[in-house]
Length: 111
Image (tube, rainbow, N blue to C red):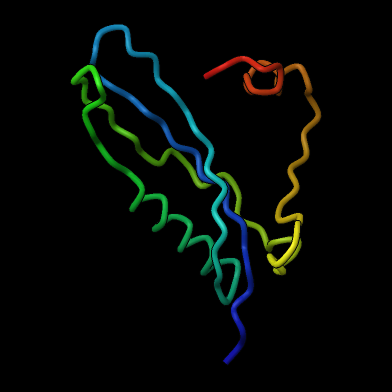
């Protein structure tokens, strides 16, 4: 039997509510998992994301629903040694202005 390999998955979730004035909130989860192949890892990432879907009432009594929108990426981990600081995943992009608009934490803006 082949040993399982470590993979990293990026899962995109959407948080919605029928409450008046509620603005959808999106989150990207980074998930580490082990699988025999990229196809198996992709299937497991999808299952993991579906299991994470939920609905709950917030402090204001509004129903909030979190759902998986998309498995954005699944890739072999860059390192599988987690006993010390390790790079697990790298992401590349070309438009830093778009990244700034989408990533509020880059400029210290609170969520």
